[in-house]
Length: 207
Image 1 (cartoon, rainbow, N blue to C red):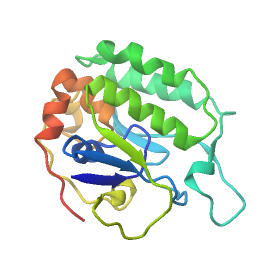
Image 2: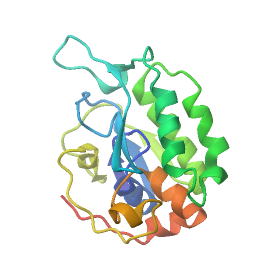
Image 3: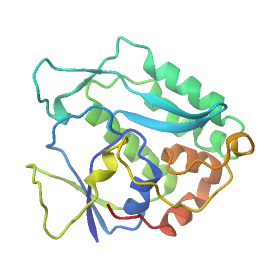
Image 4: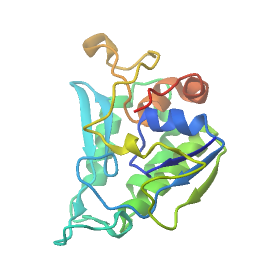
């Protein structure tokens, strides 16, 4: 199965469920940037519950701006804040130290464009998961696609359907219960090498 998705910031578990069960992955590269999507945000499990990590971007004065042209607002010290949030949330998780050295460089290097940064995050996560998948990129935007399953709807953080994913142990689950479909980082830090088996065993509720 070939699937089409948007590159997002440390993708949701739903994104990686479809990726792990696909044969080929196509990244949408020619869409417009929209606010309040996973393009520049991800959700983690912090001490007080679900926490949003948002990458600040420079919005164009034009009505429409291509995703690939959107720049990160690096005047804000967002990388340091995000890393501190991850440390606070996951330093006691079973596998944080196991992946820390691979992830830390992402929070130290400067990248101009949000799309480029998200693709780098994806590369690092697939290495952590030991997930091999063929990837390609679109050259033009198409509303309807043939011979490819369209999962671009998963980018909508505010409109997503609840997913009944199997529970796994989370750091603060004794406080707030199980929170489903967080960032892939939550699964990785809590399940470690078992994360890929988990993803392959889950299914997505179609839109």
